[in-house]
Length: 472
Ligand code: 6PG
Image (cartoon, rainbow, N blue to C red; front, top):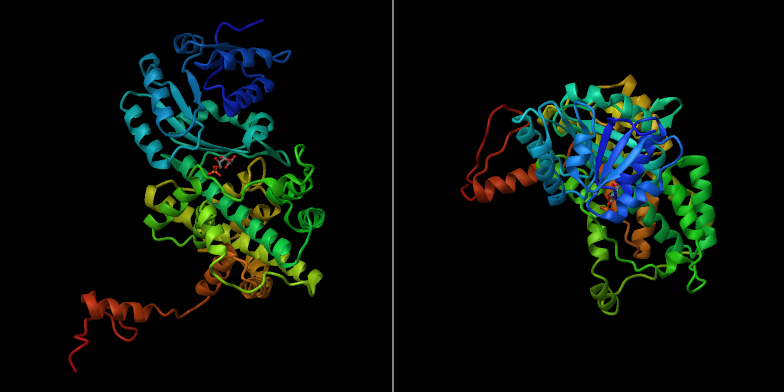
């Protein structure tokens, strides 16, 4: 029995849109899916399970006409111009009080602009980050909503029903006005880049440095995940090393080209952080490492010109593997600390009013960076909501401080083997920089004043000073 009017519309029936719609239908919501591509509409019809009140259409007019008022419409199309194209198509069909929800990875500045333009027409626009890939969309993602609160109340129940669940708590929370949701999702992805790069560095050290084969690598990640990380990304690393390529019979990972691609959300995080003067060096290093990987032909040529130490270390394997595990944990914690500082700064600058322990809470399940560490971070931030940096929150401080020596040893080992570990190095340098009561920035100020009369402040007197450095 099809309803006369449906609860929700879905614009875009690609992988994410289709799966999110089916997830809503599983939870008793009726939904209309619209896509210009007829095959996708047919696919929706094929995937309808008994009890699903869903319908596909190739007409935006029909989609909008079939929705209850106010119309709640999710847009799930690639970020950028496709979102504007979808809005152009929908806008003539919208009435004041309708709620449009962009669930893609849109840039937060685009979301803020779209919100303003639509608000002038009385239309609510929510920018919502969704993490968890295809499986998450279908079975329970982490959902990061932002935008007008009065619009969120209309979708709260739907989001809570379809989100991942951690011990009875849905991994969704209203995060704040404006583009709060998309900003948080962007930083999630920045941390995702950092974690993936740090895991790749651990892999490189164990493969090239210690000579571990793929089974040994899978075993290491499996053990680490089971006893330390409980993280999606370490869990899938173990599975990846075991996967055999059907074509060659080799391990699939060994026939994958070593050039990482990116849609850009990690880079956006670094750019936004620079605009706010917040150091997120572990994320920056991860973005740069992906960029460097893309210079494959040049790297191959340079490998025949530039010399370095031999990348092999066969002694003390067991001890070094243990150190890598602890160094990886510390570096991942430092990446989260940087991401949280950025969120706090963005919250003040853009008026998001973010509750960081809630951000940690909704990242514990469903999303790509989910891990046991986020539970620790949530607890830490609940007890010390005003802590300026996770590294000085007492329990997280202990976790980082007790592993700093391992991070140092691993960075030294990597440097002596000529194996690049840029994100681990950045993590260690950030930790040491942050714990330095004195940094050599006084010399930078002196230089700026020397060549540009930029002035400096003194440690012993208030005010602004300039010296004519070349005069006696
Ligand atoms: C997620 C992912 C998802 C996607 C990114 C990664 O949270 O589910 O982050 O959003 O995989 O687009 O993209 P790139 O690695 O291509 O930048």
